[in-house]
Image (cartoon, rainbow, N blue to C red; front, side, top):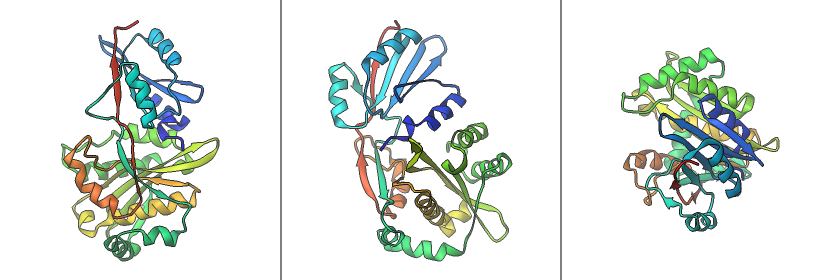
Length: 281
């Protein structure tokens, strides 16, 4: 499985958000210029860690900090030998849930918890629409902003439009649930990582509900529709993109972790984030 951060679609997405992207031997290297202090190099779950390429990029861009999020424990041993230190705050979720989409729809549904199955059945009559055109995504974004308080992070509209552009056609899906007045009460965003022209993994990227959506539990129906969409598009894995990890505790994640675990799946652990500071070359 190739992580979405190593896809060409994600590389295009970060380029659109102002990052410099070097793609070398099918590995994405993300460089961010910071005022005065220099550049940061970020490498996320690469299939291999190429220190020769890293050294070359450090010279080229005068890197002062290297951030690597390895895919497995074997890579952490290599990083430790190179004086990288484990960060207290990973950039990517260090623990997630994954559903095997090669199973039948009936088997996948049977692994849901009893309450989740009941809620999904009850919500089968909800009006669910996809929002793909720029004007529609603007409405979806406005509904999201109006659904949460100011302390909650909401990506900018241009960032969402860039994501849709970078993951075109069936590689991204903006879903929304509606009340009887056709008002958006919840939304969910899914992306598909493709490798060698084959769909691999679908990610549950973002989700939101307003008070009415939370009362009606509309996010259950939205998430289930996302799972069905991923299976229809021949993905092998559905990734919930993060649950609570006691190694890097963030209590604000406990609520949506309970929600995500209602859909079954297998827990997957990642090592975390390793960093190294250095004088610019």
